Length: 463
Ligand code: NAP
Ligand code: MG
Image 1 (cartoon, rainbow, N blue to C red):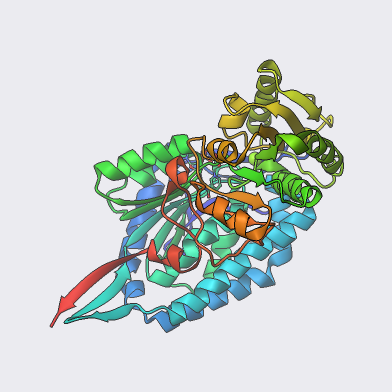
Image 2 (cartoon, rainbow, N blue to C red):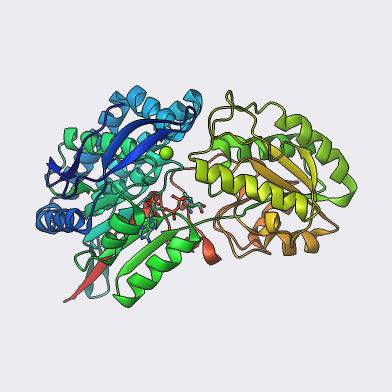
């Protein structure tokens, strides 16, 4: 696999300050396929300086020109779609079809949406005797996870570019090749030198140095709640803006009026996609007591289609695999009923975990409370709607969810859920809708106009 042994800073690939590297592992083969430089505080400092130097020019660039660069970025991504998909398959383990449709297709769509928003957004409005300008927030530190390597990058970089911000990106150590490819694409799109910079390396070293850097105005982080809490505290101490997209434990609520077969099948597909490594996955399936055993049978049948090595890829790393297996063992130990899957490795090679379905899960069990981030779904029984709502809202998270049933009933239920987005009867993902969490799932929103607003600050002139 192609890898740069340098950082992308100030519009060029510059040697890293240290000779240390981070290995990139193909999780399907367990082989090291490349190495990238391990960034240090020195690299981060160089990148932030380059961003600060580029900021005034880019901030003053007319929105129409920023829109043109974003359209070029979208087109350059589309032109390299096959290479992107192959890279995501290699370093994340995503099956080729998923890598093409979601990991590549979605970020192209998001880049396109910001080309349009940059061109059409009102960066200026009149309020009484004032003119209110929306100005870029400044230098953005973007820290991203590995689960949707390109999407998580584009969901930050595209709105930041549209707003007129300069960016330093620290991508996940497990998926740096997609980030390097993205830097090449930004370069091809004609984004001025220094507006986008990339420092690869470890979160505890490069990520931490970036989050702490006084030259950063906004830290936009996607990842675990544990790290998000630290970054939020750092930003608070420095009176710096922060956006946090964190974990989830979303509920898939199947009301008695639902089409049970469809709700269960789509619910299983939702969790198994990307090997369960989706923050918004509906990992808790809530079913009325009267239809519970029927749902268990349907879930067992539905999950059989998800064969490791075919429709389901490996987990990203040995560490994630061990963590997920640990949760499966915990579920067994706490008395949940195993309906499919289990802790045993389904293949000899690769970080695979068996698609797993648990029944008789009670709301207080560890597997019903903590984010597992693997192909594991828990079926929870409820007695009535009030019970279902208490269970759905009964975690520290609030990122996503689903409700199935007669549409008016489903909407009324969804309106009472403590969560950022709910799909009604299988409603499609909308890349223009605000995405983000309530409670400990985060602070701030990504995507669409709400995502753009995260990168803007206002200035009012009175006349
Ligand atoms: P993570 O460990 O929190 O890492 C996220 C990013 O932060 C990585 O780039 C990581 O670098 C970096 N990092 C780690 N420690 C840091 C520190 N002390 N200071 C600064 N940066 C640091 O999460 P992950 O394992 O990559 O991803 C899985 C988690 O992310 C899950 O909990 C999932 O729910 C959550 N997630 C949430 C969303 C959302 O939109 N809400 C989306 C995707 C994932 P390294 O790669 O070197 O660790
Ligand atoms: Mg890896």
